[in-house]
Image 1: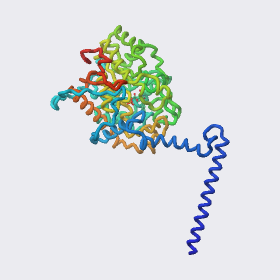
Image 2: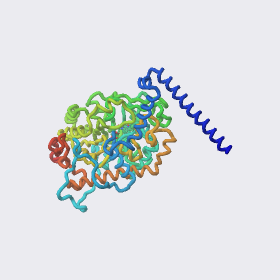
Image 3: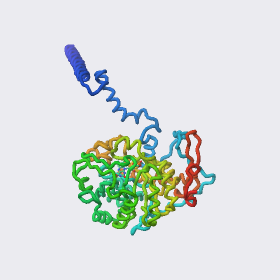
Image 4: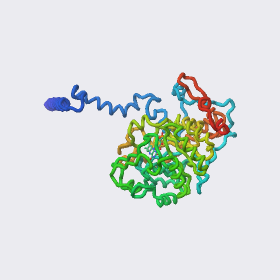
Length: 497
Ligand SMILES: Cc1cc2nc3c(=O)[nH]c(=O)nc-3n(C[C@H](O)[C@H](O)[C@H](O)COP(=O)(O)O)c2cc1C
């Protein structure tokens, strides 16, 4: 009896103390909120105004689990992400009951099924495609779908290792991004495209100019098959790369040839390249020094602006041409960029790609310059659309990030990526187990290629590169669809009727 009484008294005291503490805290917050001047909501609605901030930041995380519909989120919706995740696991990727996709949305591609598609024994394998016939060492690229540039720095060491090993397993190439070549890129012995950004990381002199000596050192690696000069990238046209100082550790500083712990900011364009003439000179120089095919990556504002390049190639001769052009859509991703550039500058790939393909083909350079397309082309339907539009190759960055386990936490610009992909925090990196993830990278690449082949067979051709614009219809604003070749006729009738 006495024990029960004591327990009750203790409980009552505890309750009074707890209530007192809550009231005292609320009073303290009330005074703080009422007297602060920076936040109008908290000043007008002390204490409860604080919940707005809390819910806003929690909403960012919970929306995707509880509230967002399958096709709603940006930049990638759940249906797109889940497709990659399932493919990466190597499990069957069939869905049940029916499509959740709204087929009335303008811009939706609808592939045109053949009445009599080829039989299994009429399928063909996609042959490797040669890039750079005039380079000392042309590159025979095996896969139509490859890994787009993400620098070591923007992404972590285990992420690069898993991509390298996965790329080797699937037979796809890995673009280094602008952060130079690390031992982790070389780990899997995959084909590598070395990207030269505006800061020339990894191949720079002390004052930031291109070093021929370092270029030769990079080219001495037999895995390095091509060089890509980055003029611009879809997420930040006209702006250089930004790697926050907290991500510049000693290893990254050494590989890039820069100071540790300081923000690493690359110039907004190459100082050596002021016009198309200097661009062709610069590309030829890199090709001569390295013996490898050389191309450039850019985002496009208007295809007319590039006509001068093709005219100049006609004057100088086909040998002077870039061996490839990578077109990055304005919707492209990045580790960090200003929002106005990300949101509003540069044509989306759906418009830029066909325009640039037409420009190249009109100048008779279809077989000379390969076109590589990137920009949210992460699922087989996106890749198949790009091949129909005239791309020779498609690359993806964020598709491969999803295969590594990315949950679209949108934290790439901080050092806090929860999946270990874009952080250099060893505790967070511990979650990314290379031995497991490299298989997922390979599974994803193989599954995309397999399902692009499935689409090709369905539209009636033996392999993906035989797909043409007439094989895909695009939904218009009124909900009806029009074959792509009707509103964007191909200039190269022989190849793309
Ligand atoms: C984390 C991250 C880092 C990137 N780093 C580079 C880079 O170093 N160089 C580059 O040209 N593009 C870079 N990109 C852009 C991608 O290569 C690609 O062009 C763009 O994201 C479009 O492909 P996606 O939509 O499949 O991601 C980066 C993208 C991401 C998400």
